[in-house]
Length: 494
Ligand code: ZN
Ligand code: MN
Image (cartoon, rainbow, N blue to C red; front, side):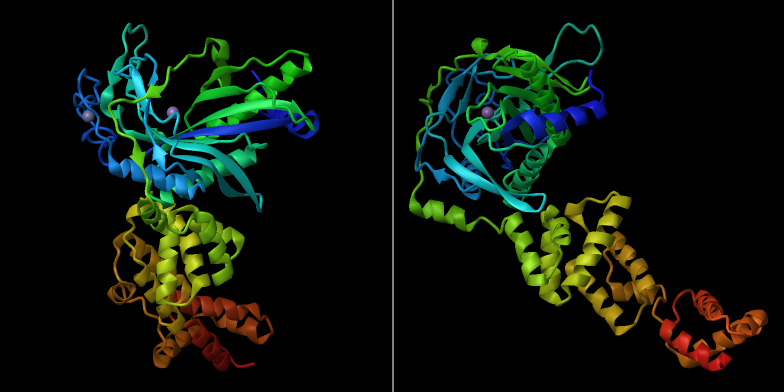
């Protein structure tokens, strides 16, 4: 097996010198409908096995599927968001193959009339915009799930059909990517588009977003594509990257030895970090596609299409550019904000209430994200509201609380969802600007530190900072620091 450093070195050689790595991705995303594609069963994840099933999704003979309009609209939305040409006439086809998780022995998919074709997606890679073309977007049904018992020596497997028939979107890119950075950005950008449009929840750990990669190598400068290898069983974005690196090196070593690359499908072994041959293209199946006779074709008219177009929100990359242009945020900060739609929405709500984009950006990208991480909060169900953060920013500007206290108040707001004013009053956190009160504390500190006063009078300037610190400590950080400073200088003279 290759060790990590040698992989990195070899990949540099592969990418930089002789060969160009050509990568395409196939993405499957489960759509966020509450019912399945052709029946009324629930799509909810994590239910007891085989409880979300009916004769239709179990593939009983004689049953008739009925298409979910919602699922079709989600798929259409994705095709539009990915700038595809929309086929106004679409039809479903049967893709025949036998597998224990596919009770009908065929999958209903789209083959002859894909919903969307010839689209593209813009993405940001190391600061510049790169366009990846989308070959097609189509709608199909999900298969069930095979469960292999963990105990060794078990001579059976189980099948859970809860997932069978869940609507699945397939997005096929052209082989337009050349580096793992581009692949990473493709996956992240596509994920964000699907989340922003609310087409899929994109939970990779639950399998609702999955990627398969195809990789080939060619000599730099050559037009002709090399034989490509497809890699399946990639469970995370990290695995996709690792598998591509592994495969690029494996292929380059074969080519170096003058061997040819077999067209084949390989499975990624997550534990061993290597890919293994699953089947060669010569053995590949003939799916015997033919039009699904039990479903009607779907015609998309102008009105429906324009409704779908209008339902697409501002997409992440556009939003990022708007944040940079309109609010003068750095590219980095805007990138952090758009990473999660809820954060971008939160920010937009805040600036609608109060025109302090930079302050809001800092609170959200630093303090809020830190609280979320430290307290393991669900970013989609935050208790703090934009209006409350806007109040906090106003309170700070008025000088009611110091910036140190503000952090404490903010943390409390995130945990409880309480109004900042209420927290400040309840805990007595308001800044002390009462001259008499501050003076009495200063007198106490001066009386208690005669040697420090001596030092200060002798010209040791940093003695003053110590005295200010003592006053702040006495007042639990609530004294107005500006007043403390001015009054102390007046008192001790010089
Ligand atoms: Zn069903
Ligand atoms: Mn598929």
